[in-house]
Amino acid sequence: MGIETNLSFITLALWCTGWVVLGRVRRCTRGRTGQPVSGTRLSLIIPARNEEKNLPRLLESLKDQSIQPLEIIVVDDASHDGTAEVAKRLGARVISSKPLPEGWRGKTWACHQGAQAATGEWLLFLDADTWFEPDGLRRVLTEYAAAGRGALSLAPYHVVPGFHEQFSAFFNLVMLAGTGAFTLLGDRLTPRGLLGQFLLIERPAYHRVGGHEVVKGRILENFWLAEQLRSAGVPLRCRSGRGVLAFRMYAQGWAELVEGWTKGFASGAGQTPRPILMLVIAWTTGLVCAPLGLCFAGHRLLWLLLYALCALQVAWLLRRVGSFRWGLALLYPAPLLFFFGLFTRSLWRAGRRQEVTWKGRQIRAS
Image (cartoon, rainbow, N blue to C red; front, side, top):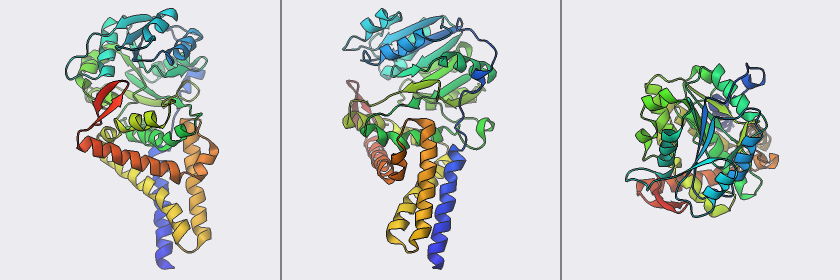
């Protein structure tokens, strides 16, 4: 009885660490009542490789915004489909990427070329599988101006209609936690990472740290770029994109999902501050303990209560990062085990410097 009670209290304490690392998933709220802003200073840069299916939704969403950017630049990264034709038809300026130099990755090279061609004072790097919600761009720019500019990164709201896509649940949560931007301390704790799908930054700050050239060989380039910006004293902010910006990844099936999350998650863990990493490990350990206690320990009512607390916490957090189904939280051990399995796979491949195939290129899973 004493040992089991102690284990239940330990599980409860571990559960609490989830609130510590993800207790404030802040949204772009100042954009609702902020001062009017203009898009005339903004260059929007979209690196795109084989994105003919995703680009229309993004570019159409930009046409419907209440304010318009100075320019929209699509950098066609040696696509094998109609990416360039689609972008031109929908009004974007298309730049054909030069051959990939040694030591660069496709996305960082495309972003670098887009930044060189841009003329705006503010640079917005945006993934092609994202799209803006109505009036989202104005809200983002208002939030950016109110936050003191510098660098702003958004975690797009993850739209996950497919069954297999539901298994991205803990990758989303752990990625947000790893930035250190959504803790209970909020903006009082400077983020240690930025989200890769969206980065809005002032041109002087971008060039001061060397832009994407300083992270040219990195997969999770914004995690590494954040370190350079923080060292240079550039203010960093992260926000949830809920109600502002959405995205959908890995719609094609399990193989795409597995390779996509495998390619860089070990690298992200390596960049996560040790205290945050320890808290994330503690939290996920608590989430594992609850179902194990329910299955194998006595006092089922006590462990059922702990399991219910875990499920409610997971449900609350997931609704803030994506359109995950409520029922998923009741069965959260399944996506959690899937996360552990792919994370282990990513670590193993990174340690052996093995490669994965991503958008037709071979890249090392590190």
